[in-house]
Amino acid sequence: MDSYTSSLEQTLLLGSAHFLTLLAAVTTAANNFIEVRNERERRFQEQGRGEAYVDELRNTPLQRMKEVLHILPSQFDLLVTNLETDDDHPLRKLRSASTAQQLAIFLYFVVGGARYRTIGELFGCGPALISRSIHRVLQTLCSLYKKSVNLPGPEVPAAIRNNPKFYPFFKGCVGAIDGSLIPIHVQGVSRDELASEVNG
Image (cartoon, rainbow, N blue to C red; front, side, top):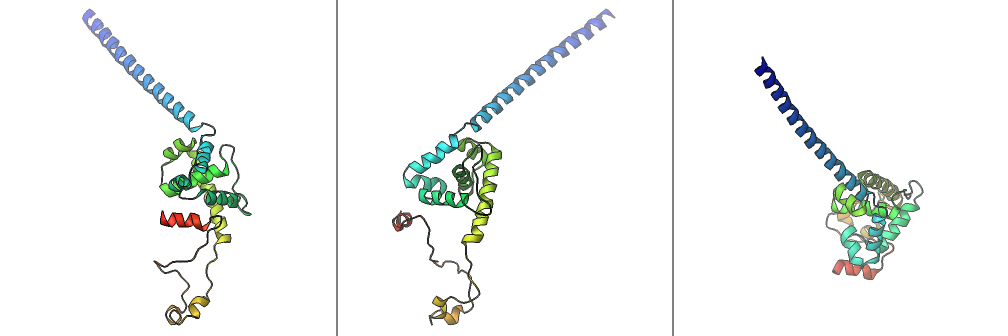
């Protein structure tokens, strides 16, 4: 019986030692996870980081904003103004992001297809703010689209109707043809800026 009791005690001690080792490893892993999460949250919550990045893009040469957001600073500023002054769904400043930062987040997401984590590290914000910015800007853009884009009516345009090269062939045509050039005028941009975009 004595050998059985001492064997049982040794087994229990060995099991307890393994359990304590496992418990220490789990505790260390949990502490490391909490530290990493807190560091990530701290990085995401850095106040002003997104604003500083937007200001940097606005104050660098034109090509920098064009490369990152695919829009010129003058177009960006005009779009911010239009989004803020929309009658139905105006884009408002959030406690943690200005309208310019929300638009920059939206454009960075749409143009580059970046992941939320990349956007969060760049603009110093969390996934909730990124999602909210994308949805708010998209809602306001849809409202602006209804007011700004005028689709052609059912009548044939005079340029087609009065030209014998086009009229018999394009009678009743109201849609766009793939590969055609459509005259479009962009507000807030000079012809020189557009020419440098086309030629550059």
